[in-house]
Image (cartoon, rainbow, N blue to C red; front, side, top):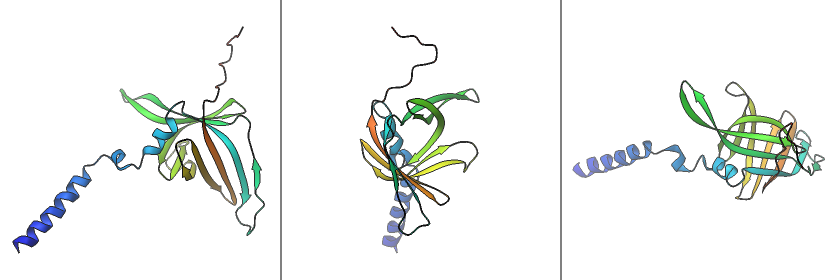
Length: 163
């Protein structure tokens, strides 16, 4: 009886200790750290698009010349408190296209555009230090992108003169 009680108490103690762990220490949210590391920029090397309702779809493949993502921490004032939020920007042909709050886990990246459940969710197929492969489904169209770590050049602000 005493042995069973000690066994149950030791299991309960381990359960309580696990409940107090910080989620980040469990490794679930390390993807954003990887995306933001270094320059925080990832070049879109390849885009594959296909109709997912077809058994043997024709996959259209393109190789954009200057499309990239940039991941960064953005500090905002919320209720008189400074809060660090994870953000990402997308550049098309080297020009700014859009910016969004980012929520990431090891197997997904979400670009949040408004209310809960709004935005684009990408499934992470490959999560390497210098290479990422993500896929996204929008109705009957599937898209897969291959990203490679880069030091992509950001566009100059309007009005900046060179020379």
